[in-house]
Image (cartoon, rainbow, N blue to C red; front, side):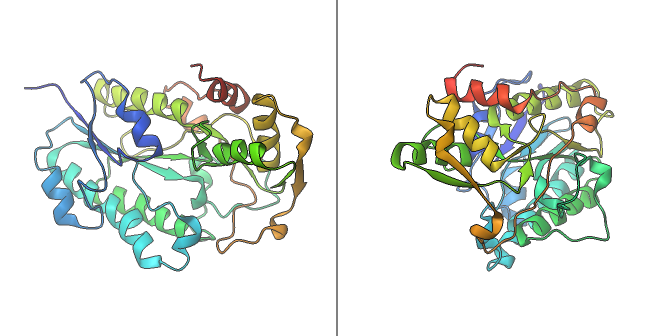
Length: 298
């Protein structure tokens, strides 16, 4: 019998590109982009994963991530974020493979008065996420584990690469630093900045743990995010300082100063107890990870 394989869905995305360059115990992942598979189409998913073997891992990093666009494209968001994981889970359950599905902090409503990081058990089934994006991602989590109870959910948050050309927050701040004398940044939303390379390393460790002992995280919901918390304002100041710019050029503002179609959670900090309880290496504190991202060091 051949060694198990990793089938990487979303290989062309932010996280998928980093994972594509990683080496797993079974070798390099087999990557699929949106041109290879349509997650909204069950036949497309079944066709692409027709050769899936027992013990293989399907790692889903693909998603409909346009948070504001989802507010007016509910059908599109649900087709990918809810329908996609369901189709993948149906295939992994039938093949005896494992689905690892990457989700988001937006599944939490984000009580502004909260101070304790969210752990998986803190999800209140009586409350709905505040955005279509968050609701569709939560529906995807539930659909995946309904179709394949062994599926593992990994929630993360505030993902960035550190590259100046990246469309994420850190990349945006780097470009604004080069083009504006001052920048206004929201200071009343708190979350967990996560360096994409750290999350990728954590997912590699998780996959290899699944191969060593599939029972440890079967059916688990885990949180994997940069340790600690920050506001967007604090993160922006750290970016400026990290590239040698004056952080005092960053000025705080409120969410009300920059209204968006989709409301952002005022608090969505993710705790790491579930991750470490599963025997996995905690992701490092976000300030150290940001320094590594900005200086291109491990």
